Length: 359
Image 1 (tube, rainbow, N blue to C red):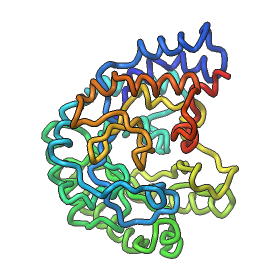
Image 2 (image 1 turned 30 degrees about the vertical axis):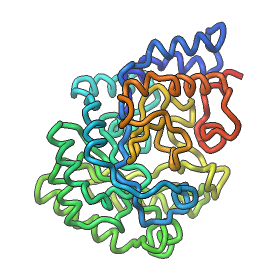
Image 3 (image 1 turned 120 degrees about the vertical axis):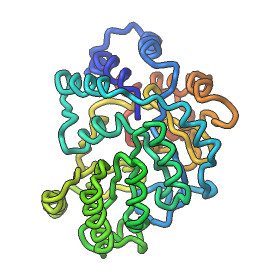
Image 4 (image 1 turned 180 degrees about the horizontal axis):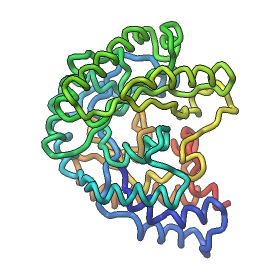
């Protein structure tokens, strides 16, 4: 979930900045404009319920860098985070999606990476981080609590970690969106990408059973088979088409996603980034925050090893953290470019920072 009001209200300023036609005297004016548009009550993008994972994905920083202790989020931290969730009413979301169609290049109804971001991520609390959600032994209890509070939820999983029985319980307890990470169409290649515990045929068998259960029990969960694009060669393009064709007969939202974490792992430097962020700058310091399993508050989903910690929900309220000095300094860095040496945002992130358009 993110602040859809900020996305809409800052659109004209963002266009001016990206086109380098901004009408500001200095960077302080930009800071003041964005600060005026930023809500003082934070929006939670995602909550990491666990960082346990048995995959060895080649494109994931966790595989190489993560030294955090494996834990499950405590009930106290999870419930405190949920108490800060304000969901969007249907008419507000419809107004946002209509505005997108009429004023931007993005169609929230499109079955694509950007369509998923604007139609699904805008309304859902994400319940994954640097762990596999189905390895969270308290997952169903967490989903049930979200459902009771009428909070839409979404998480992504590697099907090898999932049982059909637990997936059925997740849907039964109100899971809004379940994404399956499938980056190949055979067992050898999926093991090369996700590690030896990954499997292709068993994953497809599980997903097919879940599709049948959804239909039989009339669940509303959106099922999302997803493939990451690692290369731009002809063989990869054929694979992507084959993947999308395979899922056409089924009631799913299947799409091919641009690879992120390319600072860490990149096969093809000419690979095109289809995300809307490829044509703008990172807005996370103004739109949302992330709560990690230990209660640490970080600015986005790319903080695998506590590289940027802006507070802890066990020590301060989210509102105090969101409006605190560390967050203020991070926003200034994104505008001025005055990052400390080797700062995560500067050295280990794919997204363009705002200051790069102000040079």
